Amino acid sequence: MDCILLCAGYATRMYPLTENFPKPLLEIGGKPLIDYLIDDLAINRLIDRFVIVSNHKFIDHFEKWKLTRKENIVLLNDGSTANENRLGAVKDIQFAIEKAEILDDVLVLAGDNLLDFSLKAFVDFAAMKKSNAVMRYYESELTKLKRTGVAVIDDNDLIVSMKEKPENPKSNWAIPPFYIFAKAYLSEFKKGIESGCKVDAPGEFLEWFAKRNPVYAFQMPGSRIDIGNLEGYEKVKKSYKGIS
Image (tube, rainbow, N blue to C red; front, side):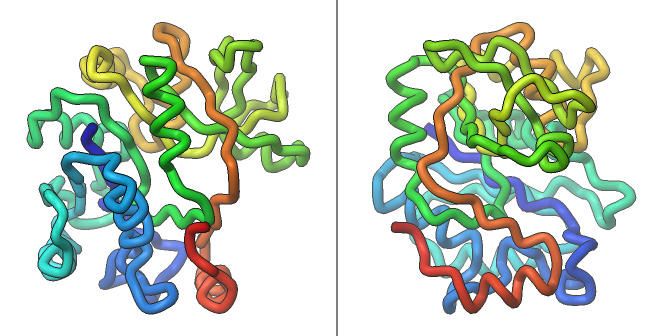
């Protein structure tokens, strides 16, 4: 399995800290955010190759960071130079599939994700289902459900319907941006883009994708820590204990 780590965003809500430095390389507990994800996947021998998609503005930072890692890492520059001309997550995934010539199952993650649990059970779940998979967690607050993807799930963990940022959520199952796509379905990214699917947020693509293809939802065994602003970053630096 390959892993695409999306690191081409500009994290404008965290300016000035991220104005000239990529958010995935900000340090928590003495190491970059992205290292927690890679360390977990590498220790559990889940990934054969990591494909990092950066933008042109921050590519030099990732080149220096890459020298600190021993894994098989492919670093790609998507050519964007500012938030206004970014490709968007979906086009970055397609860019990675094409440029890295990905032919295997692929785990797709945002490079600034911070978790308190291992991804091993999620990867094992997708392997058991032999299909596409996402994570899900129970969200009780209506306002939060309206700001994320929401899915209706059957008794076999299959997504029956999916809606990104619904005005009237049909369930309490929220879908965060953790995806596994089986190799047989990678061509769907190009089809989705060509059909006019929104490309900025991967949840928009997943809504389109799940209408046409099987997607199973794995219940998240822990928490995803959101670092959305400078205040949140300072708080997480003091409280994060790593992956258990």
